[in-house]
Length: 542
Ligand code: GLN
Image (tube, rainbow, N blue to C red; front, top):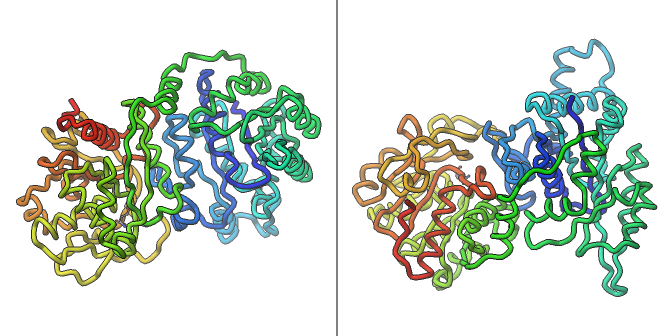
């Protein structure tokens, strides 16, 4: 029978619930258990796909094409899982299915209410995820902060689950900020106390409290938290600021959190060897080399907009003991002041991430041009791939006004065009080409030397693609499409053989990048940046 761990957060958002939940999963995994993770997002959107990354951070894409909250990315990276759309639950999703059932007449004349109909729907969905994954433990992170109006039905549902599943099979973990008051130099627990009270007010007494503080709490603070939280001192843990988020499971495990959880849930298991994780953490926090990357994007003001990309760069770097320092540059600045483009010469590599719409696209094209002409290592992802095709068409093939139909509708050379099946789609939610699709990699290319196999599966999220009418001219001028969809009609990877490292993909390798198992495209880029910086010959990736 599966057991349930629920994670709630207090005082403010961004307190680190996602990392904590992933870390709990890691501590269970290294004890031989098989956890799965659900993220609850109390907003009314059906999924994260329609939300602006500038406000909400990146949209994470699952293999089955779910457009989910970025926390699923953290769970996948920490636990090396392939989660599904169903692992993300939102108010919109829950209400939509209850309303559909009501319209069908499933509730047989009854008045449909938050309790029990909405709460039952939530509980059923949580249990179904556990069943379909054959999980021992279902970890559920409740997004937002305790006390938010929109979170209430979810908290009520997890409160009921204790009654239905039993005390021994359920565990509530509450994490809250313990700030440092700089005038007195003290760590203050009062906000945490209030958030615990807020949780109790709705009938949930936490079993474990995690203090999120700038440094390790002292014993006096720990005792205070235990006393006011009505829990034993052994049930208080501290997640303090660390150099890397990948240290958090190690920190909490050292404090005994993994053993405490297992004992409390009645698991008799011992910690297994997990040297690979410790080695990875070491490579991240004590790197031997350093490279500087310019990430030229449209949402550069919020690094969470590119979190999976940032992490994939870190994973790639760790494999060769290299710290990757990323500067987030607004592409529009290259449009406003063309001289700025020369600033890119300070960097070891140019990275163009995903993107949508026309704003800043010309600046990105300028940055790609800089990298191509100056032999600077370049990696482009999705929009970055499409804009690299445009840059090449304009400046190498001589198609001066080449563009994407996403940017201008009347280009004489629409080298990037809408996919035919997308043409008549009006609705924005979940309608892009999404999720994992097969890509066939051409032997003898750089892509093949990186991926070392012919068939790969990578995740997608796009509406536009390379226009096949321009393939001939692009190829004749030296652009190589080294990866294509299984039917050969979609261009998926491009490279320039005469360049030090010029590589772009229509797919998003970052979503499948893991600590110790970096995305080959990202790894290749980092390795090229480091080799170039050291004045070495172009890497062969053999
Ligand atoms: N806007 C482009 C498209 O829809 C690229 C999308 C992306 O970068 N994810 O095809």
